[in-house]
Length: 325
Image (cartoon, rainbow, N blue to C red; front, side, top):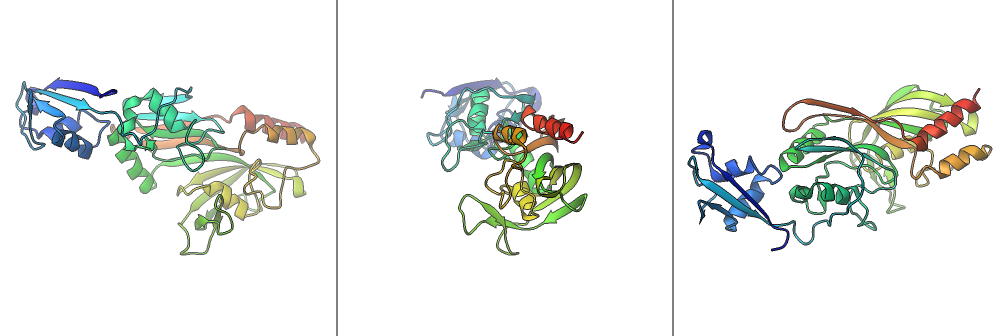
C-alpha cells in the first residue's frame, strides 16, 4: 500500500518479558496503545517473522517488525505551507499562528489549515488524535494570532488534553478592545453557548443552557475617552470555549477592535482615518495569544513561551500612543 511505513527494532536485554503491545507503544510514541493493538491484530506486526498476539512476552534479541499504514482516507491531506515554529521536540510543536489561518478543518473551510501544514511538517502526526484534527489539542480562532501547541505523538496528545481538562495550561492573550472598562481588572464568569439568533455566533446564555466559561482580565493601557476610547487588555483563560474572549468582552460592552461578528453597536471610531486604515489591515481581530505555559507531557519539564505582538497590532498601538502626545 502506498504511504506505508516500515519499522523494525531488536528487543533490548532489559526489555525481556515485556508484553509486545506495551513495548511497541513505548517506541511508536506517535500511535496510541489501542492503535498498536489494532496493528498487531491485523497481522501488521511480526516477531522474528511470525504473527503473534498483543500479550506475547518478548525475549531479548527478538526482531520486531511493523508495517504502519497511512492515515485513513477520511483523514486530513498534508499541505506544504510555512510554519512559524517557536519550539519543537520529539513530542510537541509550538507554533505562532498567523491571523487568517484556520486551526483545523470545519464547516466551510477544509484547506489552508494549521493542521494540514503541521501534517506536512510531521507526517506521523496523522495518527495522533482524530483523523480530521491530527495533533490538535486546542484551537485559536481564524482571526486570532499567536501561540498554539500541537501534539506530535499520542503520548503528548493524551498528556496535553488531560492538562487542558484540569485547567493547568496557562494561556495569556493581549486584546485591543473598544471603550473604557470601568474596572482595572476582574473576572468574567458567564456561560457561553450557541447564539439562538445566529449559527455563526456564540453568546453569553442563561445558566444551564451553555458551558461554564471563565476569563480573567486586566487593563494594561487606556487610549482616549468617550465613544472612541480603546483599551489594551490582558486576558487569561481558565476555560477554553469557542470565541470566549471575544464573547465575554463584548458582553461587557467592549468588543474587540476589528471584530465584525461581535461589535454590536460599536464600530471603528470614524474620526480617525489613519486608525480606520490600520484596522482594515488587521487581517483578523485585535487578539493575540502572547503567552503559553504547560508541563511537558512526556518529560515533565516546565515549558513557557512568549510571543511578541505582531506588527498588525503593534502599529495600531504606536498610532494610539503617538496620537495621545
